[in-house]
Length: 274
Image (cartoon, rainbow, N blue to C red; front, side, top):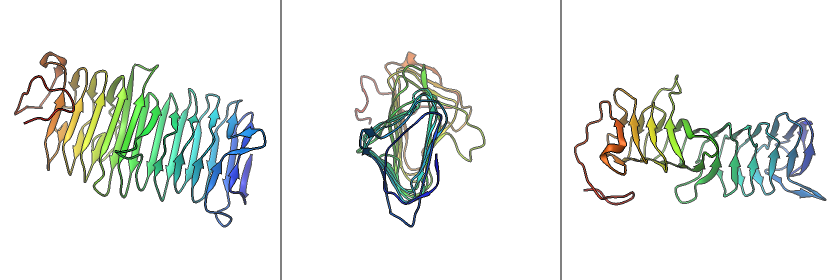
């Protein structure tokens, strides 16, 4: 437990019962999770929170693994080149002055909570996640782009995914069903981009219990089935339109106040629509 501010820029460690590390901002700009001797990355095997405060940035160049307990990274910028694996626990990543990027798989089967100023993945390079519940907030610029596998859970519950500034896009793709959960207390619906478009893709069914807002583009939804449980303003795209791709009309079980102006058949996502 290195809870004092430490003058290092390279970290590896193994613990039983939790791991806490804080880096001194006056020492070095970036903290790299790597290998030291025979210790590769950060491993916690006995429960308890793994919490790493990386000052101006964290690069995950070696795995961070916790045996079912939660993992938290708190820093300015996060690059994930190797896995972050909390098993059945939760993962919380906060990049307060930068972005969260990288190809490394993030696993937190209970939940993953992401927050950044300048992007959470990108449309060209989405983050790879595995969880049953997801939330993300991006404040200044950039996209929210996620490819998730919700197995072994029955679906991905998206509590919120919101971009507050810039013209970034929200794109969330899930292997399995997807549900926009009713989070409560939010100023807008569960998924929103105030300056861009929103795309939600599920290989299983797609259910809305909260609304979708796209301030600068289209709303595009795809699922093996579609259910809307939001009574009014479920889909709002003042600068564009909303499109729903389903296998056939019978795949739509509830529309509430959604009234389509166009039905186009034999068009699979991402096929063009008139």
